[in-house]
Length: 266
Image (cartoon, rainbow, N blue to C red; front, top):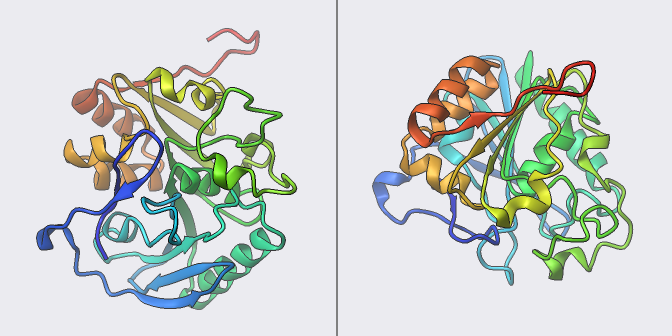
């Protein structure tokens, strides 16, 4: 199972083909049906990482597992990889309950004392949402959507074939379910193409927001080639905000958005 990175501004993903890019992470399939695709890696320690896949490169096929090495810490941590074949942004009937049941059962089985989540694009949306339904200590979202509901983002034109299939928006705006107890790390490209989503950024004491100049929807690709993707994930999982800010600034000229003060001024 190889590392994945977006290949276009629309959020498709491609895995490097080099054998050297494929980590030796043992992964088994737990479920693969029309409602969910779920894989497991059993690591060590007490951290469980829940990693959500994005839309995927081939829209005619279900999304595949993403971030095999990054999510598991090169195999060290327990990991649960989740993909939604319907690309529903967790709005499919009963889907969030299924996901929560899987996560809580896995956490109990491995004796996890810490649960973290991550994902890119649709996967980032899901990582931000998860803490609203079960305990999540930290979530890393790379170029996430905050909403795909036309009522919230009328200027968002991407992913329409999947968005049009959503009959009811149970999670119309992910900000409504982002849990106070979860530390959220959100990394966006500053390109205008991302503005329909990035304009919804609301920095807060538990929402650490970073912008990367000259970057579109390809945050993962840019971080991967800069050699910081794995480190950034571990820093977010460990809630090491200052060091993450330094790494992004030093490698990709990233900046952290200030948290507004009590009067609403940054």
